[in-house]
Image (cartoon, rainbow, N blue to C red; front, side):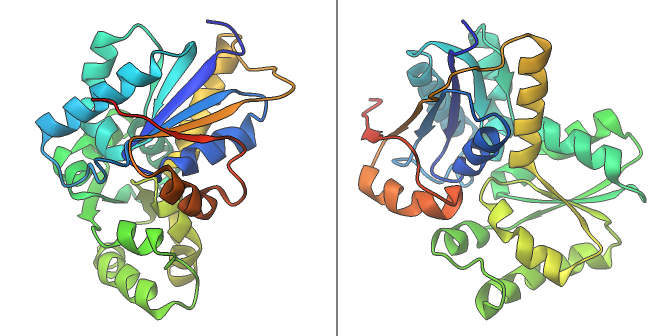
Amino acid sequence: MSNNSYIGVFDSGIGGLTVVKAIADNMPNENIIYFGDTAHVPYGTRSKRQITEYVLADVKFLNTFDLKAIVIACNTADSIARGTVEEMYDLPIFGVVDPASKRAAEITKNGKIGVIATNATINSGAYNAAIAKYKPDAEVIGVACPLFVPLVENGRFNKGDIVIETVVREYLDPLVAKGIDTLVLGCTHYPLLSDIIEGLYPSLQIISSSGAAADTLRQSLEANDLVGNSDDSVRKYFVSDDAEGFKRQAQVFMGDALGGDVTQVNLD
């Protein structure tokens, strides 16, 4: 690997683009390959065995490129299958769960931390375990929010939208009532809800797992003298289904043009 080898990023669909955006914003000279397993989205409702199978196929595809790191830009995949990936591949593997957990443990004042995520992520207990590493006495309260992903993907994440604000209150009012002072957005779709959550609960400290993952990756690349220095950074995007649909939705998550081609591939 070299400084300008690719950072491989993958997710079950399109939400991992919030991680790509965070990486690109913080490290504009990095070459990035993204794979979205859009044929099997969502992972959050699948069994552990099925999620692990999908994740290994995703990583196998990314590993056909010259990589210097892999980022599991999916909280569900990270919480279920990261250990298996680390056992099988001799590459630096970065997730989203541990960086967000570390930051939450560092900034909470009263030790009460809320985590919102998919059913699979919450049921895995991954955030509870990761936060406990950094703050053993923390009280972690997790809530599965299955309605958030389809609402975000349909553009319902703007302030004043009564539908999404009602759903946010439905999920978060009970957490706030339990006294949390810190909230982890444990799904890569959820950063798009930050403005709404901040507006409804201004006293909460909100942590994006996407931003935390990008920060951890940057620190590691700096420590190992592997920061990219490409004057014309490359972005390549691959999906397992519906490349045109991916391109249409991408601007919602990236905030601008993708800056690269989208290619559909068949992992089977």
